[in-house]
Image (cartoon, rainbow, N blue to C red; front, side, top):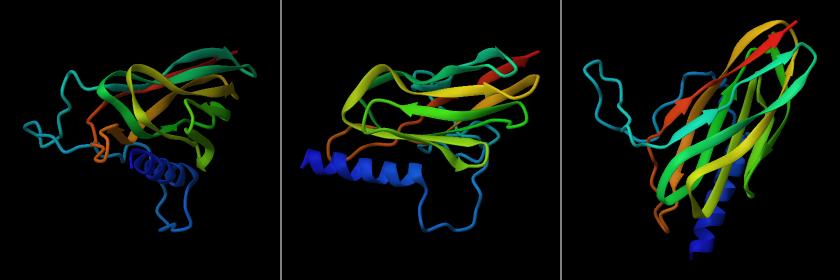
Length: 182
């Protein structure tokens, strides 16, 4: 049965990463993510994420215009039973940089540089759970023009590897930056 659960999660994650035929016409936008799990809010009603929650981050890079380089997408400090499923979106300013390639790890993870304009989606599943720190992918960033732009991380889904009943997990997100020099 655990294999079937893992395959079901992988299929759902893959469908989310590749887009679907059930397009409702809504365009994904940066910053419209909701926390993976409802948690008590602060005085303004914003959900709070525990300090010891895992962190999902995208790296930063400085390059000359016309150069390319890689940044990592990482999940840090994920406690037992480990990271079981994830979907993350990274948005960027196409006037400053482009992202011609991405690589998702470990299998059966996927990434899609054409998920939406100026957005890359990473998704994956790990039935056995990934504890601690894990690199879940890399972005190849190409500097198009002088300037800097945020590589904005949005967590769409993050769940643990609880066998038979994966649980959504609140997590911190850390955006990166690309700086393109002359």
